[in-house]
View 1: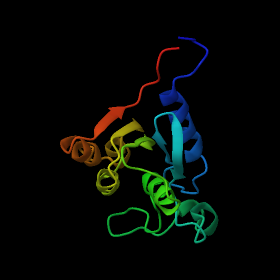
View 2 (view 1 turned 90 degrees about the horizontal axis):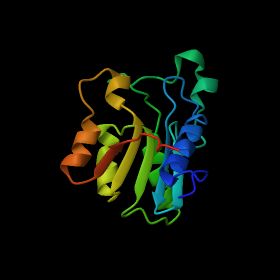
View 3 (view 1 turned 135 degrees about the vertical axis):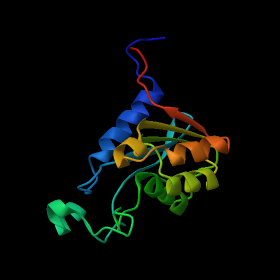
Length: 156
């Protein structure tokens, strides 16, 4: 194998990392890439629905209003945005692989499972970010047969 050619897992996770930089969220920036084999189906990053708000612009350093659990009341998660865009535009999601910079929360895990995504690579832990005891989304997905992998870059 040519050492100069990056692995597709590295390419897709690097893209997810760069997409996260597009987020207007002042609390966390998350990116996602939805793929089939070596092709990109869809991309997404976290933030309010398109055409509504840009949290950093409209709400400043405090960010958007919080819901009863302390989470963003306006935001769609990166995984949701990638899946919704694919579905809206006729992309085939069944059997896909997702690369995401933060492990899926339980709500996103339910959507990922329902859409029959077969594999998820994540970079950082949602549980660590939120200060909760476990990655509920990861556990949920694994318990129903979705392969979930903590991403580590391949040795060059």
